[in-house]
Length: 362
Image (cartoon, rainbow, N blue to C red):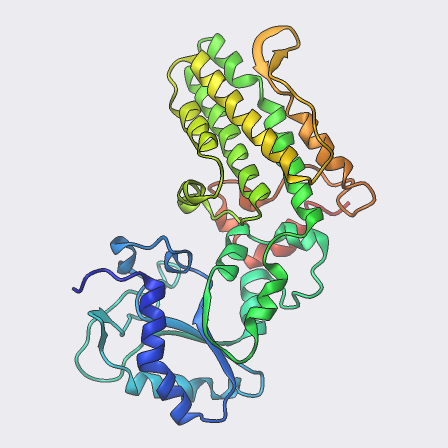
């Protein structure tokens, strides 16, 4: 096997070197877009040699107009007959979808016959419908934003079009990031969730419950990390890449160090100091964002107890105040399902889209 090549680089050069001429020679008048978006660590730039064992390799999406989608089978056949068996050391041929493993396909080297490439052909409208549950990105309702998988939003805006004659990039620009009201709702929700447990990690520790203290500390840390994504205007990926993405987020390293320190601290006082440091730094990030009026805060005793807090609810209340008169005014401050680790089988599934919306409808 050749030296590992990042998937995005591999796929773009594969399209340019192998696919483009086949498409344009056989279908010279066809207007199309092609690129790598959607699922995959290669889209996000997190892929490595381990990623290459499934659903990874020379691949791309081909998007056609409604008038041309009837050519789908002919296009796939032309690619299958004319593609090389290998490209830069990687198999261009893939197994059939495994029905016992969510339709996963694996690279399979062959030396004769037609190639079965990892190429997906859709209209862009149908693709968006499959990914998000809607295709009209010009008219997204406020509560619909809350039903979208944040990871899917990230995967759609993080990709690259190698050819874009259908102006898919312009369509995607409508979901580049959350609208301001949605962002404020999510900020309010995350601070509210922190506030609900802000004193508990130390109280657990004081009662000898070291495990409980660590669990609650980690939950608070995750919410603080999510707030950083929100203040920086960057979608967060699902749990597998969440820490990786946070490590690359353009924020003060002191925030990352404080959160890491809180998670690794064995001493309860040290854990408290680190988590308070992280909260104060992110509180400053809130105030510098200009999203709400300045929130005055300080690290202080929790109602006279030997527990320090910054009263995180102040930030939730400040964000919620900005939602007065919007459709978010009376929504429960629960954030989104895609912000809860381990339930991607629900949060990322289009089939649950309407049920998820129901959480926010009065």
